[in-house]
Image (cartoon, rainbow, N blue to C red):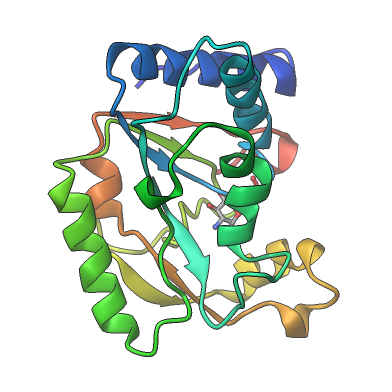
Length: 205
Ligand code: GLP
């Protein structure tokens, strides 16, 4: 593991984006694991800029997102489907057929988890996984105590995580109580992981 301390958010976003851009240049059909949350937004902005300048192309890139709330409409401002469109996919030359976000609206959620794992495994493994981190150390929606062998699964969000995420909703009651998340199994199988963390509230995690 290499820990890179940056002087500010912009430098952190730039360094993380450079790793991803290099990966995309070396492998044009790279499999990128993507994360939501406010922290990676700067990284995505740098990737959008590089795409607009013609330095990288997303044409053959495949993406696999970490998580989604259960029961939230894809048009909801806090849906991670919408987040990815608004912060990356709608601004780059990606083929949306190659993008994947777990299906939190599936009627059979267990089946949706199994199919998500099969999709990831059909890609081999993730080449570069982008991660944020929750204040309590959660990754995607894998809480610190979850086991490393888990594939995609449904989680009951802890009060701590719901409390931390209520800033994006009108009030705590609107924060979903469940989420579908890729498990640490596939995250840890990624060839490279780039975890971005910003701010004092993340220092302990
Ligand atoms: C959510 C996401 C995580 C993310 C975390 C931190 O809980 N499921 O993937 O890492 O928020 O978000 P932020 O970067 O806004 O602090």
